[in-house]
Image 1 (tube, helix red, strand yellow):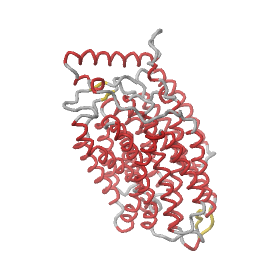
Image 2 (image 1 turned 180 degrees about the vertical axis):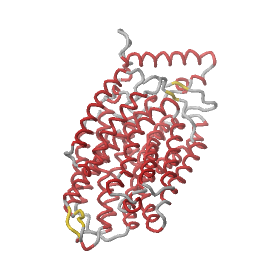
Image 3 (image 1 turned 30 degrees about the horizontal axis):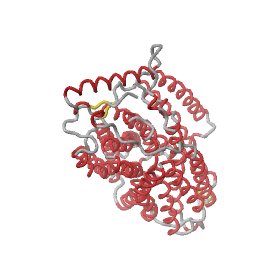
Image 4 (image 1 turned 120 degrees about the horizontal axis):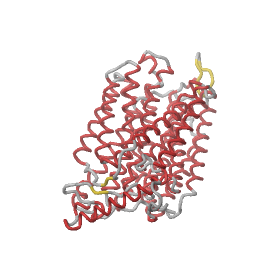
Amino acid sequence: MGESVGAPAGDHIRPGGERARDSGRWLVPVLAFGGISVAVMQTLIVPVVAQLPALLDTSTSNASWVITSTLLSGAVATPIMGRLGDLYGKRRIMLLSLGLMVLGSLMCGFTSALVPMVAGRAVQGFAMGAIPLGISIMRDELPPERLGSAMAFMSSSLGVGGALGMPLAAWIAQYTDWHVLFFGAAGIGAVAMLLVALLVPESPLRTPGRFDVLGTLGLSAGLVTLLLPVSKGGDWGWGSPTVLGLFGSSLVIFLLWGLFELRTRDPLVDLRTTARRQVLLTNLASIMVGLAFYALTLVLPQVLQLPVATGYGLGQSMVVSGLCVAPMGLAMMLVSSLSARLSRARGPKVSLMTGLVILAGSYLLGTLLLGAVWQTVVLSVLIGVGIGIAYSAMPALILGAVDPSESGAANGLNTLMRSIGTSTSSAVVGVVLAHMASPLGATRVPNLDGFRTAFLIAAGAAVLGLLIAAFLPSSAVRPSPVAAPEQAAPEQAAPEQAAPVRAASEQAGGARRAARSGGAAGAAPEDPSREPVC
């Protein structure tokens, strides 16, 4: 994409200045709190999933739209919000994302009807863009010595918030009215908005260009036609004309969208950047990590809550079940700094591969650790360590291969890849557990072999991710610091120098866009300094 252009930033100073150091004291905890609040929103409905048909007076199939709507809107919103942040300001768009979470939570809190509930959850899903935006803000604002650990912590906030929010949500659902879950999410989101507004500075980095409306519509249509059958295939039938037709439509839409993006002047997603070896392989590995991560969330609560009469269920309450999963989030939070140090010493490729090795080994061990409550806690910690190290390495790999002006869109796309992994995990594990079930009274419940098979699938995904990560460039290092002050913010240069610097920046950005759009013959080729990091 185009060069970074410094927007007027008042007295803002780039990393290393006094203003940056002062704001940096609060920047990381505030942005991480925003990420955790989004993760809490995403998982708050989990404890009442089984009761949703009765609570909303609808069928089980219809009630599942409460989950599916958030998945679809979150997948669509993540790359879009990242691109909007690059164009119009990352802090501004992060506030918009959090504001939509508050609005959606209030919509859900004031209704017990299916359609308004689904609409509210869809609005909530747009908050998923806050996490990649937070990582991009960190890159713009923090000095190099703090960047690695900060990005690692922010990247792990999605798992941290989900794991820590689950027992709290279970307690609220068990002892109070279930609508309190949504009012609580609205309150947390409002606090996050206030903290971001007061303590997070707006980045002066901007990408010149226009928002790609047609590209946005194409990507949205492609993602919906891909993820909808993935989510609903179990209900509609994997071989049904509807599911097969949606998959076929998704393929056609993505092909046409890709051709359009390669030819447009200001694409929503720069596919040439996405095709760089380091970016492409990191995104593919992210799908595998997301697939492996979600298997634990699907399996462990069921093992803990199934009655002892099954012979393998542990007969625990929703609250205890949530408390047993919570150590996963704590482990992710604690190992994020360890992952940053490992990335600094050996490179983020080594960190990613280390996390995947731990993840694969933990799931294999997990097939033997389903017989007691303490064993599930140990398993949660081990999985949390693997996920935390792997997730923490991804932003460094992505940002180490893209221009600062592309950081929002690039991080958004990486988060989307994780979401595709978790969606695929939900579909695959759901099919496995539905087919490997045993009778319990008048119903059928997943059996122990089904749970172990799900863990083996997760281990296989981690191994596949490890093989993909092995082909990452060995020289992949953490992202370089952002542009120097005189490059990033020409308005702060001496008056006699500011105009020439700004003009040169805009001219360079225009040349890149002309080259990318494949316009007139003889357009300047892309700057060789932005070749893939290999």
